[in-house]
Image 1 (cartoon, rainbow, N blue to C red):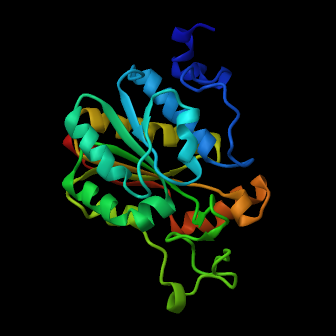
Image 2 (cartoon, helix red, strand yellow; image 1 turned 30 degrees about the vertical axis):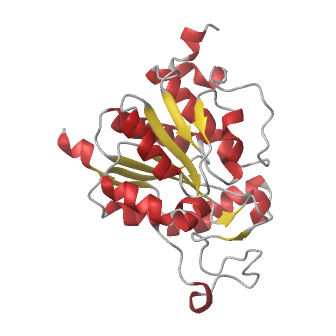
Length: 258
C-alpha cells in the first residue's frame, strides 16, 4: 500500500501510520497509550502536518513518546508542558503544537501551568491521559484516583478526610474563558476509538485556526498499576471510571460559532 493510500482514513485498519517508528513499545500489555499514539500519528498525517508539528511530553509513562511518533518533540520538566507549548506556539504560530500528559503531570505538579494556559486561551491542544494512578513510578495515588480505590500509597482505599477528593481537571477547564473545546473520551472499543480520533482531530484543527485552548481527556487503563489483566482493567474502567468521569463533549464553542 502506498503512503497516499495509507493516509486515507478508511484504510487505517490495514496498516500503521507511516509516522509510527518501527520501535518496540515499552508500554505494558493493555495500556491505552499505544492506541492514542497511533491516533495522533494518523491525524497529523491526514492534516499534512508531518513537518510542522511540535509535541511536548514531560515526565510519566509517555516520557519516551518521541521514540514512536516521528515528529519534533520537546521534553519538558515535570508538569511544565503547557508553559513550554505556550512559548513555542507564540514563537511559531503556524506550527501544530500539542502536549501529551498524564494525570500526575497535568493535574498535580503541573496544575498551575495547566490552569493558566487554559485560562489564557493559548492556541494549543492538550491531550490528557487519565488512568487514575501513577503508573510509571509504582502505582501510587494520583489526583484523579477514585474514592475507595486502592493504590500503593493508599492501600486501604482513598479516603476524603485523609487524601481529599479526586480532581476533575477537565471539568474545571470548562469554566475558563480561554478554552474552546473540552472533551472526555476513551479508547477501549472501536466505537470509542473513532470518537477519540475525531476529538483529537478537532483539537488540532482548533489550534491551527487560533480558536483557543483545547483539552482532550482520555479515560484510560493501567492494568499493571491496577494489578489486573488487560480485560479486567477495561471492564473495571467501564464500571468505575466512566460513571465518575463520564465521556462526551463538555464544551465546544467552535460548534456554537457555526
